[in-house]
Image (cartoon, rainbow, N blue to C red; front, side, top):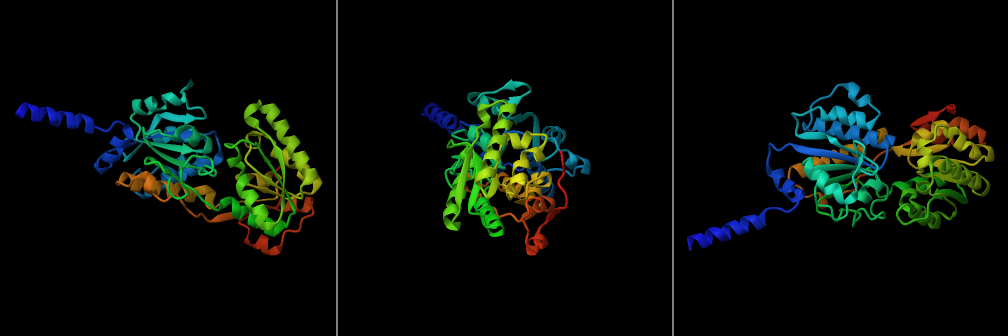
Amino acid sequence: MIKLLIKIILIFIVFSIPTSAYTYNYLSSLMPNKQWRVGYYESGRVPLFNNILKSFVKQLIMDEYFPELPASVFEIKDNKKLWNELSKINNAKIKFVKEVYCENNWVNGGLVIRQEKIDSVLRKYKIDIVMVMGTLAAQKLIKDNNSAVFIIMGASNIYKAGVTKGKIYSGYRNVFATINPHKYKQQMKIFHSIVEFKKLGIVYWDTPRNKTYSAIEDVEEMSKKLGFEIVSCFSNPEEMDEEKAINDLKGCYKHLAKRADAVYITVHRSLLKHSNVYELALPFLKAKVPTFVQEDPRLVEHGFLMAISPESDCQSEGRFAAQNLKKIIEGAVPGELDMRFHEKTSLYINKEVADIIEFEVPESILMVADKVYERIKYD
């Protein structure tokens, strides 16, 4: 009888052992001395991600989960170099694991790790948490992957992109994401109130996954509310080499400059990588067409009219994510945390662009603008 009881207890223990690293990690959040091992995966090199990572770390320092760092560390603009510096710290609540810094297709030291190998990579380095930057990275990693806690930042329209199952909660027990639900609609309202356009030009590539980058569904909704027509041009840089992608984008910009009376400058690989942004903006300057930059306000300095960007380079998003990481470490379930955050925004305007396109920016707008560029920065 005693032997039988021992066997039953052993069987119960075996089948009670969590089958995924995530389940183990969640239970171990009740262990106050546990060090949490963090990996990193991004869609590609985007300045936005660098800003978010820095603000994330600053919040960890404020919460005493990470030690104070020299100011020079926060001046590093290359995320991989920044990660390497962070990984040197060993005696903290959070351990940034040097070997698990991954870009694009999970490139790690030259080795491309396919989707089916992600679990094994995370297990090999005993990763508890993965910081996921960007929509593409999130789409590749999240679904039915229970090997770690995933914290998603810097992503566009994550619900419509199929990354989360809900707009308030992620719908996955081990996933937390940051979401500003009204960001693009707010941009449309402000741009339209200033310019009062009737035809809005927009570049995007017409696939369910990639339409999320351009926020086309939000633009379509606002076109009905505000009464403007959408003039589209399709461009898919993923199917082209760099030179063809740039020429394709130039072609779209020339097309829209002739047909729209304002243009919404959406995310595009070539726009992020091209060395001469002014050259890309030139068709709109010649045609005297006002432009509004969707994501990267730095483009305004190089020849586009205006942008609205999160205040202080997305610091609020990084802080919000780190604050919720603290809740997770203290025992909260990631999928039960509210993803919504509302960030203050900054308005950027280029006065020389306004003069060239003969657009008179209202004095009231200039007064509230956070950054006014007097001149175009020619590349």
